[in-house]
Length: 303
Figure 1 (tube, rainbow, N blue to C red):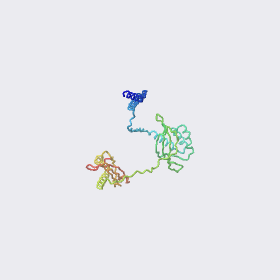
Figure 2 (figure 1 turned 90 degrees about the vertical axis):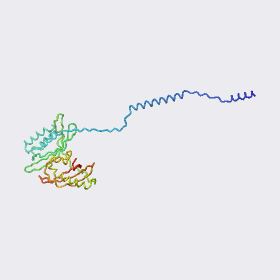
Figure 3 (figure 1 turned 90 degrees about the horizontal axis):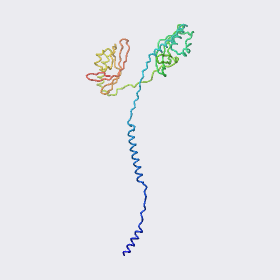
């Protein structure tokens, strides 16, 4: 029996499968190394971004525009003197030659040559300047300015005379020390025309009750009756913050024309036209005001 068991045990040992040996070539070690590299790289990148990050807060940019005030008094005076000399002459040889000499003081050499025959020796007319209007003075390029002007002339031929009004544009150059010279001859131009702009007219919006409207209306009638002749001391009782100046004129109050009332921040805003009679000229004067009123013990004009 014992031999039989040994035989069976031997058979079982023989039939038991053998384990296959697997050789690993450091796979786990490589993965761990890669993960560490990634972790360290991510941490380094995060630190770098923290130091170099762009602030994502909204940046409100404010553009500062510096306004340069241009003193045009010299250009205006130079232009007016030129216009007076350029458009003034008598139909006499001496007067025409004198004009030619005068205008050369304003013109470049090229323009002096160009203007030699603008007023001929045999011209039948005489001209005098009665008015000059400067409409605009604007920079054209570096140290060069465009001037638009109108000139009123009285043109006389024999015993007949007529008025003439024309508009021109010239270019002037101003050097570093302020000297001026005309670089472009008077060129026909146009003056600004009437605009078709119409401002929106205010309307009462019902925020002021009828009793207050009546009270404010009575105050305004009283105030504007004595306002034209009121002294600063008298005015101080009705007006704060120098909202209205004293005028010291002899005007007779007539009526308020279409006053408009609106409540604004516990104050009352009034748009009103005041009809006056000018005691000196006897003409009607319509003065328009936009006022802000408030009441303490009495109504006062604060703006």
